[in-house]
Length: 230
Image (cartoon, rainbow, N blue to C red; front, side, top):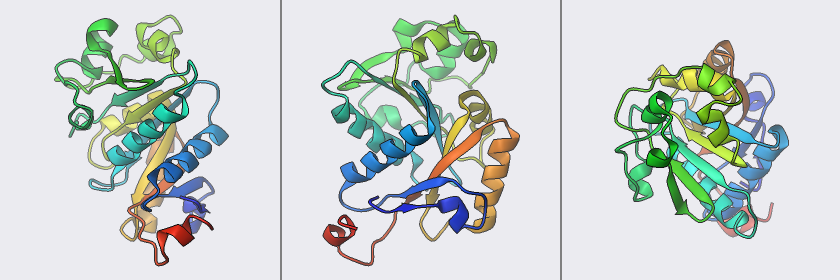
């Protein structure tokens, strides 16, 4: 991800920042994604990642970013909260050797943070799984500053939410409205112009804002060592 690409302009829609992922130097790619977020987000950076279709790899992108931030923030007091909002196919708890017994769905209903928050799944990184129930989103829990959810999220420098694919599950648009900032994950040579335009239109129609995109599974036609010098 040494090269920034304006994905939305490239695909024929309005401007936005994008980064390419798929090289061997994953820490370098995640570093560029981190830089992209800091360009667009404020002190408490809450951002949702969603793919335009299943298999594009948004979970991989979120996890690699969390792993990078775990190292980048290791010597400070800032922390990251990783949230699995993918009720269609929750997988982060498997990748982190965590549990899905109680998660986001239960947090939104009960507000029981200590029973739900999985601490230090990585250094400086806490985790909330998706949980076992269907997601319900009382918006007051996000809009009221003294709500349990708002108090919890405000403790973190970054809140990274892995959402289901945009076109296959309604939760994605609900999360886009609640978290506002959205990164679209697209798949190299598979995501078409009209699909990307429709994804951006739906996010904005739900009240979210596309701050940028990731071109995932990028195959370099030049050696990785040379690509990373560009």
